[in-house]
Length: 255
Ligand code: 6PG
Image (cartoon, rainbow, N blue to C red; front, side):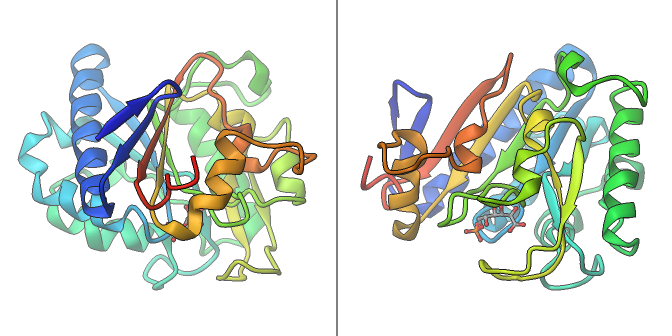
């Protein structure tokens, strides 16, 4: 594994990427639990983190206290919680089914509600958890999540913030929904954390694997002039937190 200037850790393959992500999660969670008594993490969706989540479940004894960890999501597809496309269902199958964790520690986006209500309900959940008053502007926030895990799509999206989508330009709300009627699949309504709240995390870690992400990763990490407006993933810069890129050599091949 090699580390470069911009907190980029490159692993030889996707299995090593999952192992690096697992070790990183365990070390950070145990450190924050010891310091603060609890650890809040927003999980990424998509397929990349699946192996990492299942590896974490297998190494569950390395976590000091699962009861001190609170799970959230960076985004969710508007499908039932037991649907194959559900990001919650991905984490349930890969991780939660392997560990013993209080149900109250799993803060699901309630996709059985209409999308707009699911988004506003999730923001109410977040404000309550972080003890932030309803009318407090997002700019006033010091820090929220201890860790936000994200992936990127080949179009430069992250969470469910897609290029040229109003959700990616949101400046006030913590959570928004978008109809997501065009590729990439699945073309279903999504609920997503917005960039202002993502950038209040103490740490954001991107997990990126595969040669198909190499071109867009180059544009995100070292953009050239062809991209006028920065891609959503390129707008993730935690105000007072750390940004870490965990990528495999195939995805790093154009850097
Ligand atoms: C989602 C994810 C999304 C994902 C990227 C990468 O709900 O789809 O949050 O942002 O992280 O699309 O997905 P893959 O890991 O499947 O390439």
